[in-house]
Figure 1: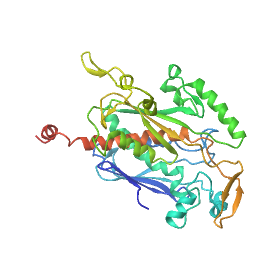
Figure 2: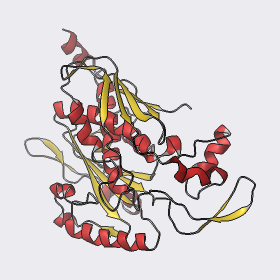
Figure 3: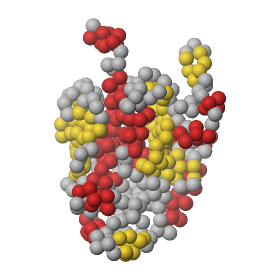
Figure 4: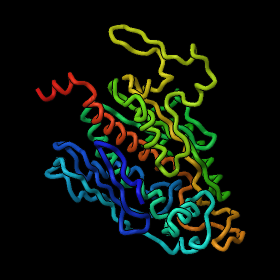
Amino acid sequence: MSGSIYGTLFRISTWGESHGEGIGVVVDGCPAGLPIDESYIQSYLNRRKPGQTKFATPRKEGDKVTILSGVFEGRTTGTPISLVVYNENQRSADYSDIASYYRPGHSDYTYDQKYGFRDYRGSGRSSGRETIGRVAAGAVAGAILKELGIKVSAYTKSIGPICIDYNKAELANTFSSPLVMPDLEASQKAEQYLLDLIEDHNSSGGVIECIVKGMPAGIGEPVFDKLDAALAKAVMSIGAVKGVEIGDGFLVSGRTGADNNDAYVYDGQLRKKTNHAGGILGGISDGTEIVLRAAVKPTPSIARTQNTVNKNNENIEIQIHGRHDPVIVPRAVVVVESMVAITLVDQLFLGMTSRMDRIKDFYK
């Protein structure tokens, strides 16, 4: 299987399966001297681990990270950083039935067509547990961005039809909302909505919004490696994400240029009056907030009776059993945040060579 490596100068390689021995990542290209330890990386992983609320899978995993290499006495050494989380609570028997048929909304059929067979235990590499490696690497990227004064914050914007009210939203509220919503009133409504869906053996999708503050202007390549294109690829690579938009996204298609253009003004510093572009112009950061949203599909594993086909091409009815999230969105928030952070670090490193005067300043 190719495609498990992401990045150019700041590069990550994830490995492992949902019901294998463990999940891990190797981070290559991290500079030496970055203060980091297991407790910091663990704080990221704790945000995505299962079994914490009634809206997440009851699978109990500590998701305890171990640093195998690349860190000494609390600082990175400049060599590859290897991180691992061992699986502790696999129940592979829950998945024995699905070896013979294709679950709607899952990658069972496509994996069979590509590889000729598949790891049906918890979906193998297409499981949500694959994102453990991304989040662990995202913690390293987040630490680098912190040193540069750049802050990446993601949260749940909507669950199903219920959306936050920005006038009632406070980022601190995400820590007390089981759905990671900054509007607690909307969170309560969404919680009841999900409880009704659970009763009906159903699931929900939603939207994750990510805001980047402190990003300098001039980062991103202007043609194939545009910053917004890189961010879109990174976030779209998350299994449950089916759409990404930057700034006002699809709303701009219904506007005129006069309505959509962000006017510039100078009042001691150059700035924009609005930010419809979401902080990126021509594929390059413009120094304002980067705004990104990810559309997350409903959890495909539901207990409701569904129609499918087995490997003998027989039409059958199934009910999926096991431990599944009624909504993926809350645990995916930190995954989106991590992929954005990883991409920004890689783009920042690439941008260091874009101007001769900066290269001369560094080496002279």
